[in-house]
Image 1: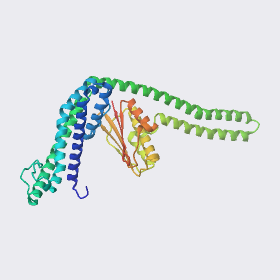
Image 2: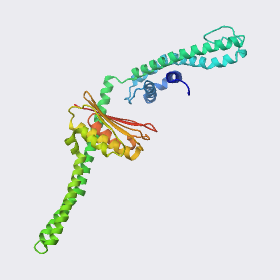
Image 3: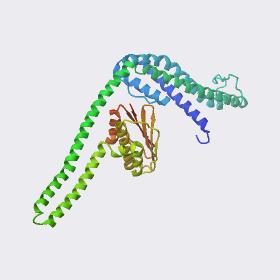
Image 4: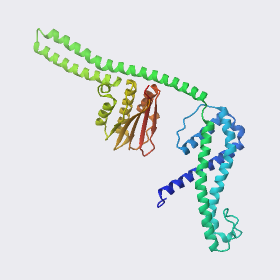
Length: 383
C-alpha cells in the first residue's frame, strides 16, 4: 500500500470490503438455501440473523444493538437473503474472479490461444503486442467496474438487511419496557447499596469519632476541678477529633452531592477536576443552559470516574473532556490517548457510570480498541 495516494487507497479498501461482504453473502445465501428448514427454527434463526445485522452495521459504520427475538422477521430475512444474496454475491464473484484471472491470462496467452477468457474484449491474441495492451485495458475496465459496483451493491444489501430485520414499533416498545424494568431494578439495587455505604461510613467513621469526642469531654469535665491542665489537654484532643470528624463528614456529603456543583456549577466543578487530574486534561464546556441537579451530578461523577481510571490504568499522556448540550440531550465525552481495552463488564467503576446514566434514562458508550484511543460518551436527557 506504500506509495498509493490516499484517495486511491480509500477506494481500494471500499472495494475490498464490499467484495468481501458480498462473497460472504453468497456463501451465506447458499447455506441458507441448503438448510432452509433448519433456519426456520427460532433458536437457530436468531443468531444467524443477528450475525448478518452486525456485519451490515459494520459495513455501514452504524452501531447495531441486540434486538428481541422476532420469528417472522427472521423468516422474512431468510427469503430476502436467498433472493438477493445469491445474485449479488455471484456478481461479486464474477467481477473479482475475472479481475484476478486477467493478469494470469495476459501473461500466459500462449497457453490459452483461443482467448475467450478475457470478458471485456474478444480480439484474437496471437502475440505479445496484442496480449499486453488488451490485458491492461481489460484489467483497468474490470477494476473500475468493481470499484464502482461492488461498494454500492454491498451497501445496498446491508441497508436491506438492516431494514428487514429492524424491530417493529411494537417490538421496540416491548424492548423499551423491558429495559426500563431492568434499569429500575438496577437503580433500586444501586440506591440500596449507596444507602448502606453511607450508613457504614457514618457509623464506622464520623459516629465513632463523635463518641470519642463525647467521652473525652466527659472525662475533661470530671478532671477540671482537680487537674485543669489535664482537662485542657483532653479538650484540645477533642477539638482535633472534631476537625477530623468534620473532614470525614464533608467527604461523605461529597459522595452524595458534591458541594462544588452547587458552588461553581458543572463547568467550574469539571475545571476543578481537571486541575487535580493525573494527566493534562483540557475541559471544553459549551452553553448548557439550565440542567437538572441529578443530571449534573451524574455527569460530574462520570467524568470523575473516567479521569480516575485514566490516571490509574490507561498509561495516557493526555486526556480531554467535552460537554455539550443538543436540545434536551446532555453529552459528556471523555477521551484519552492511552492503551485502550476499557470494558464496562470488567470494571465496577465503569459499570457504575452506566448504571447512574441508565437511572436517568441515559446511555454510556465506550470505544476502546487495543492500543487506544479510548472514548467514553455519556448521554442523558435534560427534561
